Length: 100
Image (cartoon, rainbow, N blue to C red; front, side):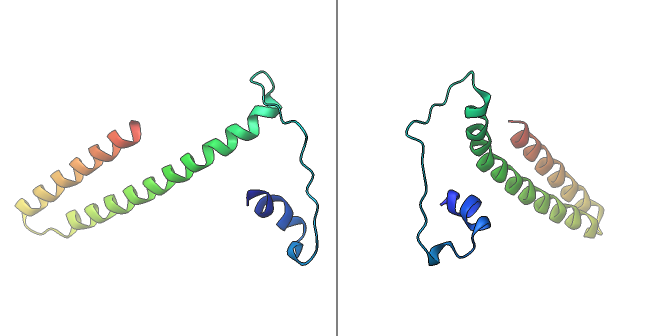
């Protein structure tokens, strides 16, 4: 599917309307000392991890913004202190998660 989305579709948006031949090499060799063969695989391997990280960071940002909003809306000192402590705990928890 990636070949279709990333290579064929940009070249020919109507690729499904006609026959297409895809040539694959008889031998694909990946060797550790050849950066040309290793680099594409390393890049594809990192993509899901990066996407998951950005999703996690967006979630954490949303949660922190909500906690800050709750803190800002507190009128009583005791409620503001409790909200501030929850905000600090949440921040520590997220930092520990990110650093791990």
